[in-house]
Image 1 (cartoon, rainbow, N blue to C red):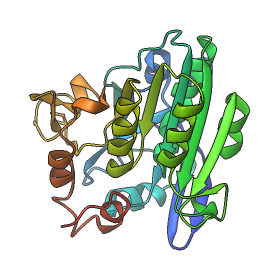
Image 2: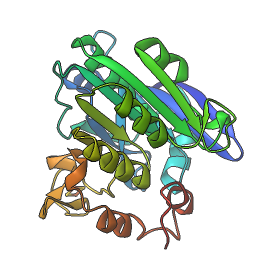
Image 3: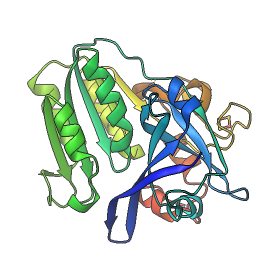
Image 4: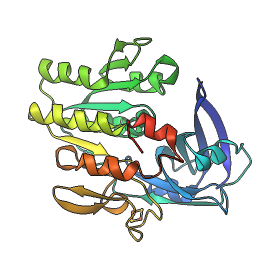
Length: 277
Ligand code: FES
């Protein structure tokens, strides 16, 4: 669980996003795109779920990307190569269903861009033609642009202020892409309003949308019930039933309410998700 390397992807306007490579040979052998790990930075710290962005079974490593949003992620961000995490469990959750769909659009917003990266790579390898649309509030907050651009058959960026790519939202571009060319799957990860809109826009075009939810988690193994979400009128646990679900079946209002429970402590992530305490 040693940290082998750390680099800063974003250090802009008080917001920092880091990439860390961890020594985790057992996890790296099993890890597949779409799965996550649960991390404890210290013995006293809480457990947080983080998506694995890359895994290398030869080197015995996994790579995580995280944004400092609260106490625990700041504690994690203060660690340096050579330091060790207190605990690391994984791989957890269902892997993304990778097969040849045909044309696939992947949407990433904010730090969710890191989550679409391994999925984009696996879908491309499976023979899909992939369109990648990534967005952030401004240019300084866009991550993994080069990596995703080199994978994608079509690549777009959007920023709220127009400092990079299109001024507007990734879902504006999605609407245009769906009108221009038949798509077989949309895969979206990011703030709740973005995933909700992506699901709506895709559904209107008759295209299936899969979303990877950022529900609150504690144990990550289906025991605490903290990550429950309503999907198609049924209660599901994001950690063991997900984290991916059919976007048109998710109860987005309920998810938003649950994720706003700790807005007083995690104000930044609530701002990103447009949630109100
Ligand atoms: S995090 Fe506890 S049940 Fe999913």
